[in-house]
Image (cartoon, rainbow, N blue to C red; front, side):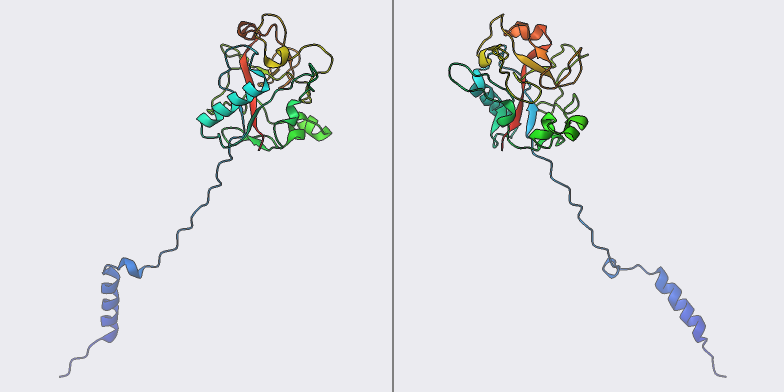
Length: 238
């Protein structure tokens, strides 16, 4: 008597065996991993000095203030830029006035976190109606030092929100003959005055970031007494 082999049964058995067999990794198609490109961080181009020179408003003139900006920036790896202090000087002894807005480049400017504080000079100073209405992005949260650290402002101890500028709200020098720059940042006397702004936009009366009020003297103790520490803004001009 002949044996009859059931082919369908054998076929099912073979398929079941194949399903249980291990699969070679090379036989399984693997989808290519797509690399996620991260946008590089914006380079540092604006900061509040983490420390002053310790001589009140005597910064050694614009040259000394610029050198301080350059030194602090170099210490955090950003010395490959040309740094300028945001300071205006007044016309004296035949020398013309210098406007802070004219010496800081064109922007945009980014803080140590890469956040834009202003797109350009007009945005920084509110030159247009829209810019004046919206305002720049400079505040206590964005006005960081070169070390990516916050500056002590109103409500902190000590309050150091007075930032030396010697400037009017539009970033230009005062031209009324009254000293608002502590003799163009060469005096640390107990008398005299320098115009300061409030980086945190707080305080009584005018809370302008660059032209809030005058200091009560030019010495370090005088600046501390009015809520400052001899700090100033630094901008990359290139």
